[in-house]
Length: 171
Length: 184
Image (cartoon, rainbow over all chains, first blue to last red; front, side):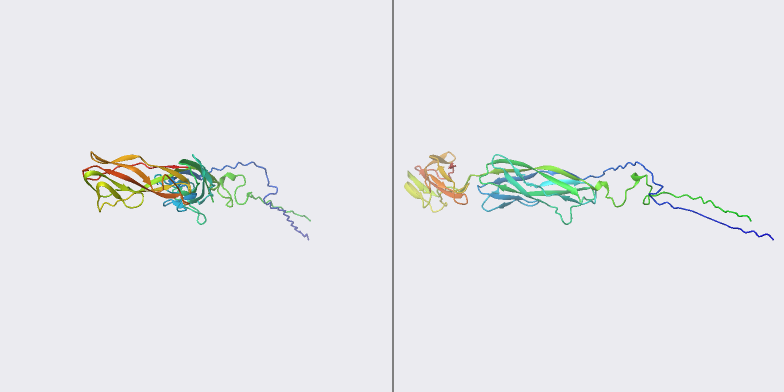
């Protein structure tokens, strides 16, 4: 009698390769990005303190973002004509619903016929925190800037001007 | 005895992935943990500030000179209005009760404790239509000079003498006179 024996041998060797093994390959990829809605700022109105009676005394004139000028001390520099008095005004354009901050504005000075007058303590009608001003639905947002002017004794008559820089940045 | 080997070939395919998306296609999407590039950046703008300074020194009229009610008769006369005190009449004039007589009062402002000198006119005329009366002998209460106080202020009173003609036509006579203050 014959006996047939089947011997079955099955052998699998299966290696599953994960990432970074024998499948690795070199490639050069180019990354590009289109920057849309970068933040920008435009000036709508310069700052103007109007006419000030120096009155021969040291003092300050505060120009708020809204309301009349505030003179100190009394007696001291006082209000002349308020023709032209205005805080500075700006409009920011950027991503709707993004928030942004206004950087602290560095002090500067106004120069003219006499001693330079310091201009500092800038204020805005949108302060941080909270909440930082939001670029509104139309992608624009406006704010005003006031400041304090330091009048010397004496302060020669005439027109004094200066420049200040306003910086905004996304949060 | 025969031995049979059995071998099966398994055919399969496997896709290579990098974190869930195609490795070689970086431009199509950005990983969620990197902020969108549009959200970066800042911007600056310059603005001008301006102020107009006036009136370091100023002189303002607070009260006008007023000789009040004066009666004129057949002879000429004068009304003396001192810087401080009551009017007096000389010659053919009478002093009426009404009319609120007063010397002129001025306010002077400037840098504190500054000395100044005062210049007054020699004479001028008050007029009513074609009629006029001379005013002269202007005097100030402090003589020809003064000094501002610690607040940079002071006041000044100025009087004068009104020359009334004989039978001076009735009416309101007015005029302006200059006061010049020179600061040292």
